[in-house]
Length: 320
Image (cartoon, rainbow, N blue to C red):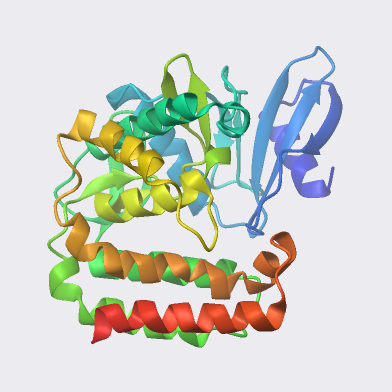
């Protein structure tokens, strides 16, 4: 337990005796530190601390979680305490009742996987049903309303790309970020007509949990008001966690069918804007090249050659 975590715990739970502080799991986001805290009385909480002193992500998550809880049937964690403008920005949440999605997914039969994919798609559509007049960055709010710094969707999207660049673990391939941003700017007329919906932005399985027959979502710190088509494409890539290959078609269709069951169809313009979002999504590979090489045991030279060819192909699709 470092000084920042100790300070946040003292502010959030000043009269509680702490038994242990441990890891909450693997993360590629160095801007936060998240830990599981066990109190002497047996109760546990999760504490997220902004390692870079930027309280904007804490403010966003502290607003969006109660807003989603109030306006949808999507399960969300319970916030026990949060402070975005204190000496150490933090948010503390209670453990969720159901398992993180990784657990039921790991040992599921094909039939059970199909059901999980369907439920995940339906949950995402319920979030996307929350519509707004403008796109924008969420700066605060509460269960009743969200405060937005509004802007054209192209500009908001470029802001999310810049954030990925900030998180990147190495800058050897930084030029790809500039190339994708330029391609996004060239497609402004197509992008700015996109619907404006609440989007999660990071629906990897560790950020999802199952509660009864519903899928709930954790970790709302990069949520924003954006194009639901982009969020749906990104969620499809993250949910199935298949790298350098495609997931089974039946699994993707189950995910989309769940989405359609709530939304009545895929987001307007999904097919037209998907090529742009493919290139934006792929920026995680050059940005976290070293982590991909390590985690997937890739040969660095061969992996770099594949990455460069794939990025060239994706950029060509939206610039030619």
